[in-house]
Length: 128
Image 1 (cartoon, rainbow, N blue to C red):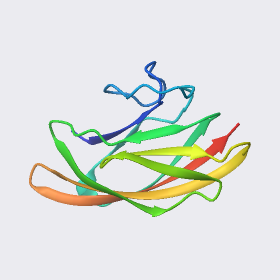
Image 2: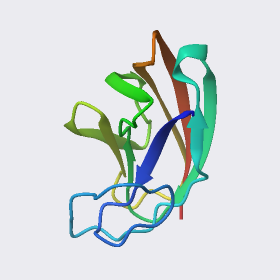
Image 3: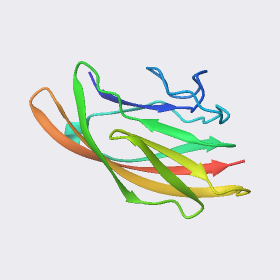
Image 4: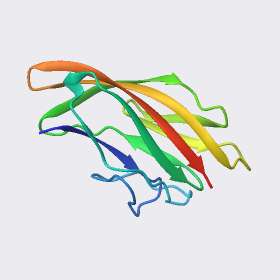
């Protein structure tokens, strides 16, 4: 079984990559991205395209086979900010009035059964 990362919108209605409950917020829930599944112990480098009109919440929820241990921001977006509500969540919020493409990268580490590893994930974000 592969470890899974989930993308949560900020509002209670879940859209995009989902699996658990996200904290409610006044922001519109409209972040869309493909399902992200990978082997953490293979040290992958991934690129994810996501689209939003407000914010995107990237949550790394442990599964029965993969335990995520930490997340660090490798590069910040040029046209927005990253908020860290907890150790394994990063929320992208575009600058007020910004429309266009933005990018940020994170490194998430964890272990699967007996092996540990880290994944570098670059998020290409289009704000509409």
